[in-house]
Image (cartoon, rainbow, N blue to C red; front, side, top):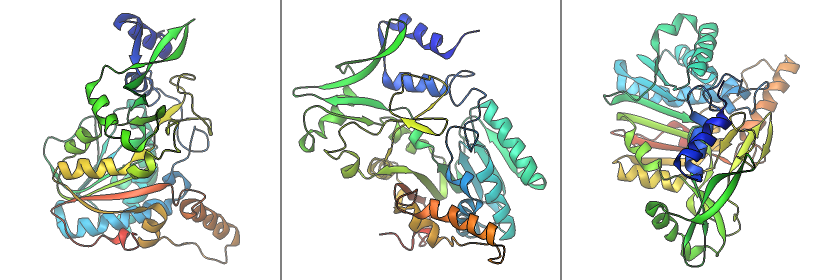
Length: 364
């Protein structure tokens, strides 16, 4: 049986002596049946490689639901929610439960998920938690052809988009490639042959030292342009920075990070297909791409401010001391600056919707 390692090595041998890191990351994460997000290992939660906010507490998803309710109420009976990469499916289940409690269910809840394995896991989760709502849920493998009215959600999606890794040299821009040496994947750093990458990095040169290493997501503008929203909200939640922090001179090794069995490291060339590979998100780049796509950058804040504005609070009887303390700890994880509260950001992009957004009243 072909392994992901042998598959990528075959591609490298067939195309020459190397491939760009962008290509490597794409193959490592998304090769059908072999890539990290396509194969069958458990990725989310205590038994997986990392825990996302919806896995920590349903309160996170309830806050998302209340922001969705504001949009769905304005659209009335035709509102749709589209979630990118729904993970284990628990966020979708908790959002639907809360929207049902608020008497504000969407006409449809669409999940764009290219992994057949994750689709099955999501369906199992949703059938367990909201079996009576399963008819409202539809799985897609590509974007809808017609634009929708409602909400598009992407929680920890953009960090897993393949990126180019670069080094700013004195006279040129070098790119990180992946080659094979003694049957192992190795870095190869050479002047880039990608003119788009060279032009994008040269714009950063005035503020950065020679030898500076980082990443850039060149596919981001096309992804933003592709979002099929006619009226409503695009809610993007991820860890990252604005441009001046992302490309800070002191952040001179980039943001590349791998997650494997709740351990983090910065070597994407090992555990290929068994570990997640991520890069932090440049939210200024998102804003620029959104404006170019005729979307409005409605607001931007950190996760703590968003959740508190959207009504984050314990919902367990304080007399149940054990459960109350457990939920209080979950809230701390979601909002404390030393946990997820500051590093994770929330950006709202809108189309034909101008009302102040519930979750951004504390936006700085």
